[in-house]
Amino acid sequence: MRRRAFLGAVCGAVALPRLAAAAESAKKNRLAIFVPSEPSADWHELSGKRYPRALFAELRRLGQIEGQNLKVESYGREQNTSGLEALATEIVSSNPDAFSSVVLAHSSSKN
Image (cartoon, rainbow, N blue to C red; front, side, top):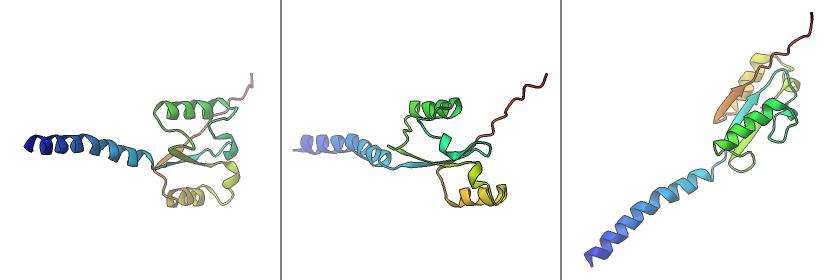
């Protein structure tokens, strides 16, 4: 009888972290991306642009998949009508789990 109780406790202790991990993974993380020089519509996993594709490929490699366990909120140049400070306040007040600001330097070909 004591063996059954012991095995029950051990099996419960082994299963509990897995159940907790499953519940944790069901939560969608929220990522806010601010790109002042690009339209926000370009910053998603299936973008035709190189930098968003690279970012989302790395997120996917790390297990963060847009639409499954990751919700992405992109803020681009079209939201920047009231100034950077107001937009930054709006982004921070939305309380994302993570924030990324991307500044792309566009090279000019003046020779």
